[in-house]
Image 1 (cartoon, one colour):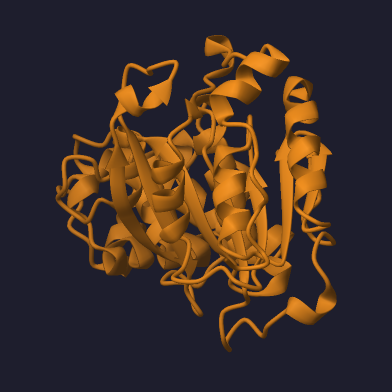
Image 2 (cartoon, rainbow, N blue to C red):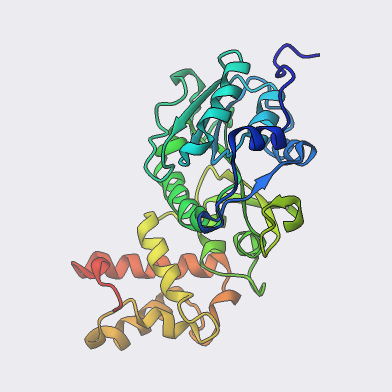
Length: 318
């Protein structure tokens, strides 16, 4: 047996009984208690986590944490907002022989830039660092959190100060489908574009809702993200996000209608016409049908207009 495996421990169900734990439905929490399933999830983080540096978000009672440690990770940092899970996680930390560090904190506020040693950093255009972010995310924070992390990918901040750190995260199945949907797919949306212009995104597999405690009303998608060396749209994140959000605002109407809301009414028609003339995009297309190259063209056209008109970038519809 590998010396990095955990010693025998109480089962997760025993831990839950011992500490009186239960998932809070209002916090959109769900537990995965089957360690064969947590092993399967962690396997998709990489063929081998031996010697890796892992930050796990929302570990709950520690099922996925056990699988990460048993795969030989060198250092594991877990960030859990719910203090009820601290005793069970601290017990796991004591059994890990110094490999597990537990933080009772909110991941939306937690600084991930100094949790791992400087030696793990890799040049952005070089090899991937052996750094992984793994999380069975509560449904109510998963979308805002991935948008925040995609902004960090764009700016090389947060967990991406180490280089192109990989992410393995869970979402409602519908959100997982949106993140990975290609053009013309029924689920093609703003998250599709924002994720795919910055990362290679893969929907690894689907977890049936019945595998979780309590059973959610939906199935769960496991999604892997590998940041690209170069974004497909080489413009600031906030500008790209603004254009994409506007274009998809009326996703089943002509994309012209979405572009129009980028501009104040007095200049709306003139600048909208300029955007489409400059980009070469057909204004009667619907947003889900647009290719990444076409969205890039719209972003470049909008960026040029913003460079010419001071303050336009700060204009927001309604």
